Image (tube, rainbow, N blue to C red; front, side, top):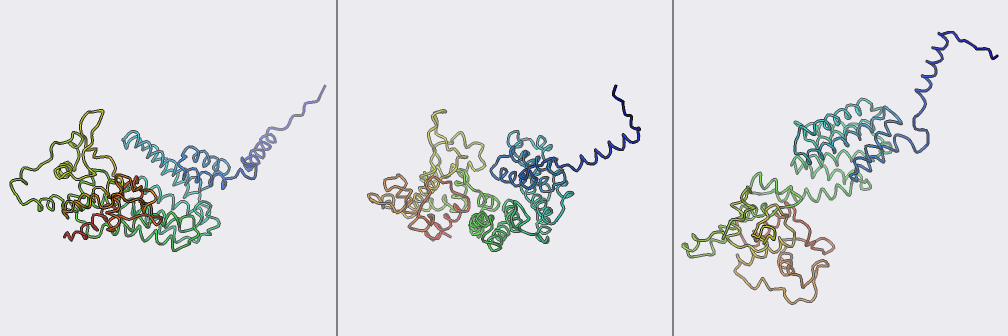
Amino acid sequence: MAKIIRFPVVLVALLLLISAGCAKHVSKCTSPEDNPQHHYLLGMGLLEKGDVTGAEDKFQRAITCEEGFGPAYAGVSLVNTEKAIARYKAQKDAAHMKVDVDRAMESLEASAKNAKDDEDTFAYHVAVIRVDTALKPGKWLDDAEEHYKAAMKLKVDDRKLLYYDGREAAMYFMGRAYLEGKAFQAARDRFADVIGEKTSSKWAPLAEKQWNRTDKIVRAMAGITVGDVGKTIAAQGMVSRADMAALLIDELKIDKLFAGRIPVESRLAKMKADFTPADTLASPFKDEILTLMKWGVRGLEPVYDEQTRAYMFRPDNMVTRKEFALVLEDVLIKLMGDDKLATAYFGQDKSPFPDVAASAAWYNAVMNVVTRSIMETELSGEFRPDAMVDGAEAILAIRVLRHRLNIN
């Protein structure tokens, strides 16, 4: 019969404590590629692609590998920020997004608490700038500026920054913050800083694109007369038909200009839109739309809707570049009194634009606005007829048109 060996209770307890202590230091991720830095990088890449769920899995795996890995918590804060925004878009209720917002803030605190070096701290500060920009809590732009200044004071080693790659990342995201806050000049300056900091940076091409956009906005804002409406439109990536009506009426003074072409006052007094489209009744720019309809500006006419069997203005539809070209051409024709402009380029065999055929219905309009430098092409010569007009482009084109027609 085997002899049973009995250990003293104290010895057993001691052995258990030693065993537990050893287990605590055993890595939960043992293979070379299964490490927190690797998972964090993958998570940030997935987040960049819009895969929020995949990014969250990678950040959580990074935390599993190393519970105190600060950058992973910063990544989790960005995930929860995206979740909060998606929840608000789906439910239109700020209360429902509070859980995700709270989690984002908690993750930021964990990121700051677990930062082991300047590189971890840098990732935390940039994450705050990004969360502030997306959620806009309280005096968010002031807070973003404070974290930007703190990030730029750090002595970081670009090689250890993992995803952010260089200190210019903070400049880039601060530029995005200024752009969201409509501080356009400051945004342009930050994007310029990125380009000047390191041309080989992965943030440089993104910053250059944003610099071009903000530079256009800054130029468009100079001398703008429609106040906050114009400021809002200038920053928009797309312009709706209702917004375009407001710009044409307020910036170009179309009603006054067209009225000046009609010498008979009694006839002018009787002029009005033939009807009020049902979909314009709730629009804040209803009056501007009806004024535009009164003058029959081509490119922004009401269109027949098969479902309702009625003509609708579709105020929320976005204006394409080819539609805008038609609008500008029509204004030119009406104000110059030159009907020949409408057919000036008919019959041409070859188009100078690789994406606009000479037989296209909008070809003549495109030629009229491009040859007069009212609208611009890409460096490649492409006009991008189906691309949406952005706010700054619309305002700049209207301003050039005013100069061409000597309108004060």
